[in-house]
Amino acid sequence: MPGARAGGDDAPMTYAVVVSADDGPEQPGRLELEPDYLRFSGGDPIRYSDLGDVYVERRVGGSDWGRPALVLISRDGERLRITSLEGLGALHELAEAVVESRGKTAS
Image (tube, rainbow, N blue to C red; front, side):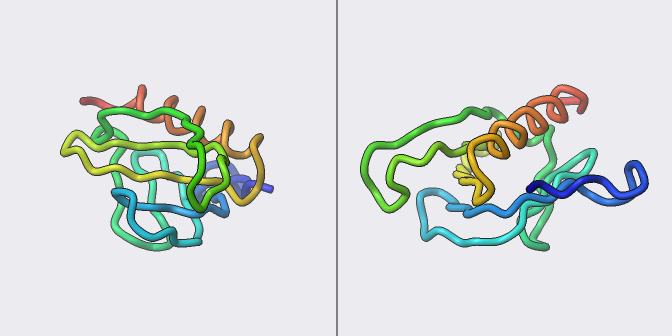
């Protein structure tokens, strides 16, 4: 189940995910959603304002067996494919949160 914010906005929302950068190897970890950015397992933050496109896709074949994934494409063309380990509901919640947060940031 996705992590809830403890005590209001003190803690980031967290999701158990598998991430693939630019169609590279899949890496399991934790995705944290902060008010202005997201971060994968303590890596570098990705600001919502740096995202050029956000969508959900389902591939046929491959190692993910057609699981739906949230795809984030930066303004520089870098592509992150995020699959939820918590189920389809969590993936859609994550997608909505990213789109909503992206709309709140200045471009």
